[in-house]
Image (cartoon, rainbow over all chains, first blue to last red; front, side, top):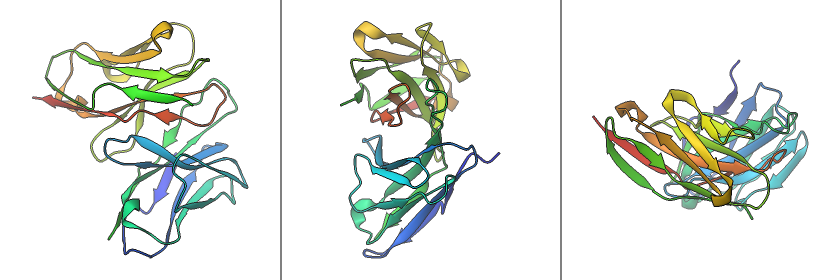
Length: 115
Length: 113
């Protein structure tokens, strides 16, 4: 049981380049999330999905797009990378079937540097 | 809107010292509360969680947290820290059945051997 897997783990982009981060979970979770982590700011929600085919904006969605074509995958895209998007990105998933257990499970993170 | 405040951004302790990290949240209704830990270079892992029942929650590695509803607080404690507790600690809150978890800014703990 791998849990939540993110690829790639590291990436360096030039300003203006595009890339896609992939998140895969094998826990049959309905909800998936993309966060960015910056020093002193905790984790900020970029986009999230409450089910296959649905996505919604979080706190800091500008410059990012997402897709949830399959329940187990949640893709985060940067169409034109900017230095301000240098960050560590975490994917997470959770299962709403039990309304009490809203614990999120996290991937290992992707360290992205935009130069 | 929900928010989470962690009082200390950096804490330095010697081994065997006691630890208390403060966390306050702003939301008037029922909440689920979490503490996550992130060891250097690793992802976030759940330390403990509170959903209902006994407000004193025990987690892994000797950590515990107390939910005080009247103070909107969920402080993390450990009686005696170890060097291996050096990490960043995040308090988080969400609404039962909800999907948006709000995180605090984090507290970096450094334990001197």
